[in-house]
Length: 338
Image (cartoon, rainbow, N blue to C red; front, side, top):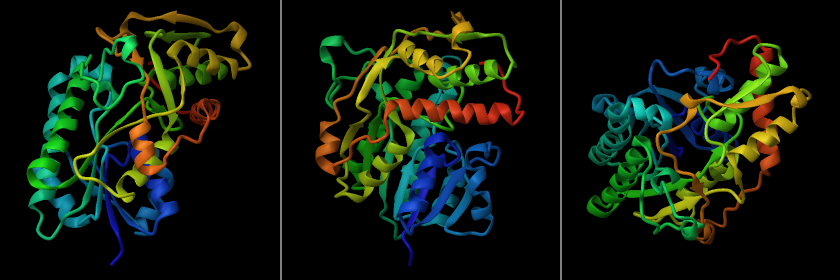
């Protein structure tokens, strides 16, 4: 019987790239869980394959509905689980904290219980937390190691602390093969436009097409980030579950290049033929009430365990992100200016 993998949140940026990677580099049968109303833009290129049931199957499921999770587990019967689904927008979590906490903390608990209760199953499980759990880290604590204390700076970050701890608890209490990751900033094609660098790329593409005035609206440009490419993240997650998976282990994963959000914007602007005429304006609505402004990881533990290192340069990631938005804008799609 073929190896089977369940990806929750398959229609998201990371989930869709992970599906691409696993289809290209394994012989696994993939089951992608998503809500019936989830946009399919990120997996449009995979729909024909799913329709033909060529190693790819979509399953309706919702982290807030335990019955749907039991159904998804029973249908997929996975050997590997990549739990990526979440309410993943930090700024939105300030206005929707209860939905964020329910989806991310209780949703993880519901999924792990569904997996624990399924007869005859003992999958290797990846629970995706976030570097946001570390929150406001003093500069002298950089780079951030796994044992750095949590100081979450948003309801989203609090929810990911819960996600992290729920996963580790299930490994310790019930012997499930759960590992958690704290992935630092990762981006690239298909990144949602609510995230800073993707919003910048989208605005630049819209300016180039004459769709909006030559002004890029921004939030906090001083936040220091270590950047990695989503395609490197997909490769890391495959190694996580296949290279001597260790129940209860937790890892920081991230890139090798650090700069402020403002410097990332400057780089994106340098790629535009209209860069000389584009102005930058801070918009209050884009600022978080509290921000995790120093996000630089120590990834030694994960490297020593798997040998993973980021391969795709920052410049390539930014170029591909801007190309992604140019393609969408030039195809005539309409977008909110956010």
